Image (cartoon, rainbow, N blue to C red):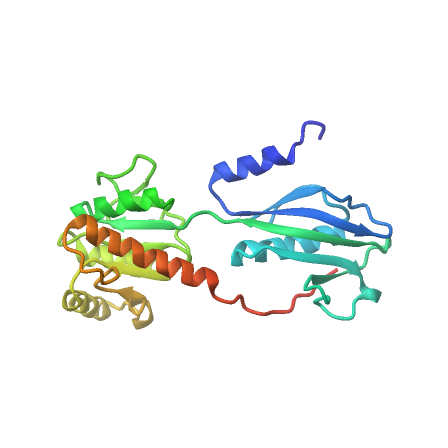
Length: 272
């Protein structure tokens, strides 16, 4: 299409609020339809927007691009003829994909995932929940708050204790700061979400009592094992602003710990 502009595509993907990956051809060797500098977008649903070359390159970029979205790691991949492949990782660290295309060329591509800020879901409309929402917004987190709760206007809203419409994933966080209002329902919804990190503003004894009730109701022990209560780092916090700050500090610690964890080593081969 004459009016196609890859940078417009990238901007639309960013505005849509969904993760994606930008693939850029950085080098070619021998005969190939790919051209250095060409860019395309890989969406989380497996769509390739843009042109990078032939079918072999497309298959490799789709596979590696979705993996990059999943792990959040920038990487270099190399697509080269099958008869020239001796290992699935070259000496320079590039991940190798076999090509069966007759052109016989080699293409190097840089894959850069666009990582959305984590979503912080906060249950409650309390002084602590409101302070936490304010602190988290300043720190750049996406927010989801109950309908009717005070908080930043940019926050996504959810009804009661129903998170079913929210795009909560393993990288996201849930904090139960309901403090006496629908505690059990809120905690259950938090634990049934796919978030890997869940915290509750409550005493350890209260959290244990609520978890016992949830266990009797059939909530699996491995789900409840994700709960951290009392929420927050021990900074001797007293007022709601300080408590909220301690909770956010713990979330930042979790986030950065997960970010720096060594990526899982794996070998990948294209189906070309």
